[in-house]
Length: 457
Image 1 (cartoon, rainbow, N blue to C red):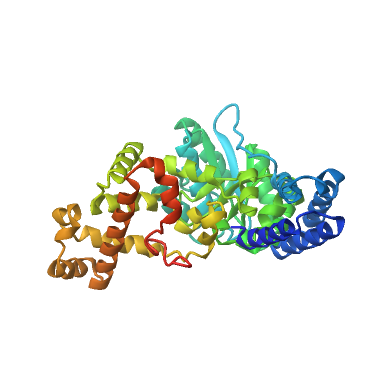
Image 2 (image 1 turned 180 degrees about the horizontal axis):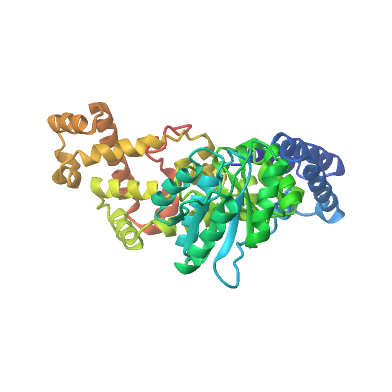
């Protein structure tokens, strides 16, 4: 996410550093480029205007122009203003004093409401809550069945309705009663949507709001629709009073205009972003981390949080020992790849890395998500002895392994070559941790594996 905007802003800051000393003239030029970058990222023009005015008021001050590192001062100002525009701080979900807390999930048809209801339920469950879901979409064919399937996939309950319950309000009331009786503390109501906003839809949603008194009314929007998502969020807020926004498909939105515009236009916070198709691909939105990503600073905190959730700490310590002693086998190699897969799409992990030094090249890495699966299949086709000692894998064994994995001998050869290079690299490190920094600066990783060919290698 934010890839296009990030690249253009970094170019602006690089040009400012090249000036050596800032002047009112070259600062004006930089502000024009920042304005254009924001508009091309599909940021709402009113948001762009306010943002540029705020940056200009701070950046054109005498204190900045005469600073020892004025370009860094400008970056800091832009960062502060981006964070302010995005919402200053994470906006947490609210809960009722007496359960169940009712969350209404609203939005236009096709925005991803039903899938997001399942994702949010899973997130709540992982964070100490006992959610239940109900669909009150009686208009879209199979809408309620879809939520039933999703509920089964995430392992959480859904209220399916009693015989004769065909009206949204009846379904919602019964679901709330069921939630209370079964000790569920959050009820998520997946509401109906339309292809456009109309009076019938709003009347139904307003009735649900009046009768159920929800603590959260979360508007779900497709980030790929850009300013259309912002416009519809604003209209829903004016007529219904939403409490927050969830943007779906943020992993596919290289511009990020909707995320940068939502808070300013609606006055309501962006609470979650969908970053993939899997049910765990829903993340709380952190304005400061998003601003850092936009400025190419990465999002290491999110990476650490994701890793700590998914990676077995005991296994990680044991693997660290094996790596330092150059004692890791092909089976260890396979297990580590499986751990990486748990962290989500490789492209989203690379997006969290700061774009500095050698890591700048990560934006040009071609990510092949299927490569890890192919490598795991090859290692799975080996015998325990072969995984423990790759040196015994001769020509006939390679042909058998390739056949078992449904691949070619050449791919088996490539894997073994890359594995041997990785062991060689670790062996050079194990000669003395005191020289690790110097050695790392001189070494090259095995070309491409498992991400694809890196530029210049």
